[in-house]
Length: 122
Image (cartoon, rainbow, N blue to C red):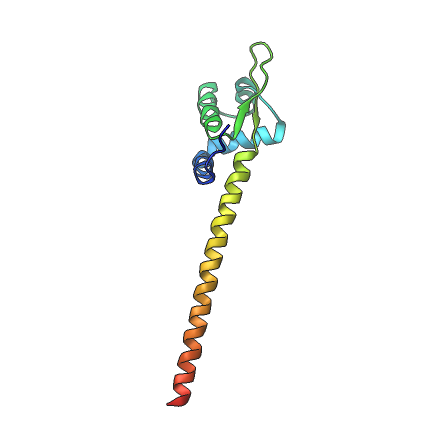
């Protein structure tokens, strides 16, 4: 199976997390463990239809997956890999920024040193 592109996976995670209802569903699954749509509707002030819709979007982003069905019950559970991929992508981006900021700082220091030297000679 082909690994997802880290940036694409990060974007999917960020898009999924923009909605407060989806974040609430993730928090509930993290707090109480795997749950069905019905279980989540009992615990949260959200309709079953809205929960099902949001769970579909979370599953599409890879943040949850359906567990083994038990009869008509289909519990959903959290998947941590997409969040870890997004964290790695963010860390890589931060490192690039740090490298550029360090280069800028060195360039500014070199400019300041040159200007100080030119002023002393004048």
